[in-house]
Length: 183
Image 1: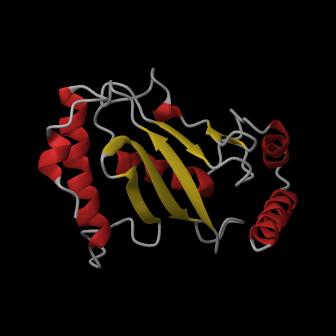
Image 2: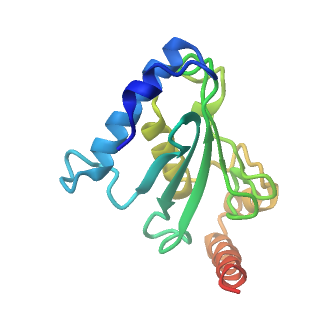
């Protein structure tokens, strides 16, 4: 269990508002994700983990999400990297997938960059927290938005309605990812 007193009194990288908010969120995340109760933990089977990479630095986090059922991402897990700016919660965190880890119309595979409205400064509201942001990324896997693709080719395939081609390409990409990672 992290020493929250030390974290709350650590001011090296961020503002008091940011540190106070992120420590509160961290406590909620730990409690929520540890619960087996589906009401207390609506993210069960969705968000496998959400933690700071180093418990002494709450500006860098990682999450593991499970691919949504009935999508080509089903039965796969994805690592998400999160950078919390010192201006959080007034500005959004920067969230990305690992490089070359996913094929999706709203993700630039080479960099992991995600195109998601709530993560844009002009759309962001401090009501959002890290749990909700990670859940929104998971929902994007379930419901791609091909009107603003970062991967234009995948976006065009979806826009044309060729879902079997989309699913086949993504499944092939993920199978290759696993093959490479297992060697």
